[in-house]
Length: 387
Image (cartoon, rainbow, N blue to C red; front, top):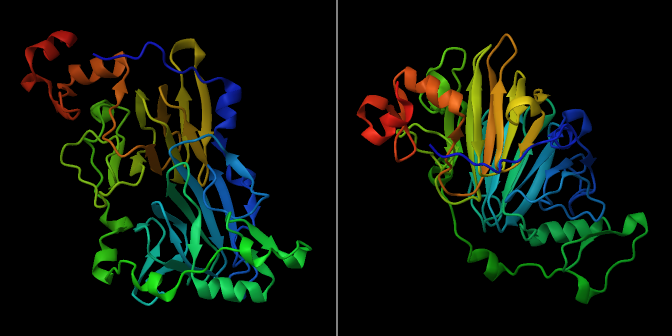
């Protein structure tokens, strides 16, 4: 059995720093060049983890340490639009609230998909995309971006043209200049150069059918009770459903619908009332975003235990190489998203207590990293447990 001797110990102060509560998230209104354009002026953007792609020099980031990905929020009232732009790295939308239409293509006319709460959609790099809140109420989307350096974004030339009519300009360094706030207009040589029609027409085009394959609907999630070794232990019962990339699931039948590299994996997690995911360690950084209910997370081993409650719409960032467990102390099932750094398949290290309890029930982890009947595993594996 593999153990990491030099596991990271998380102090109370560090644990509090890594918890981002909804009420502490800082909204930006002047984050992008379309922020004063009619129909886009009421957008709110939140930078939760990493720099993302905001173009504001006054950006406020909740947790700035590199994770291998960025995480933010787009919050928009009904009827508000995020205009056409291109990303260099992966962009994934995890819809928390509202009804949204996503459009794409050179002029936003190649197709559109409508998504609602619980859906996840990954838009390919190097194509124009925009989205609107078409519901009747305020909407909220968690947005993940691949890489620690996203390279910023490219706006459609029409957006740059209309923004200039409102005194907004974008420099070659991808910084926003607002002349209505008294900032001097940059010289022409300092402004970003708009894409040409030829460059736009050279971009890859996606059909509606192709893009639909990049949407994981809430009602199509495939939860498995065999995705975690400890799920068979009474009082545990955690489940996982893959969304994109190779995550932490230990169910060999799990295949993510979206498989191309993103710099992170995303999985839905679910824990029944009173259940838990037992003590385990990951070598990678991982973020949990709670969508319903609340969970209690415990970190460290032994007497150094540190406990935090992560409520609905909150998130917590687990440091790499740290022990943790997750418990649902509520009266209803808790649902959450797990974002884990890297495109590789992740390997969970379970505590000795979990390994022994699972072995007594006849289960262990096979050499490929999946849950399997202990009786069918090599003798050297059986000898480790002596049950």
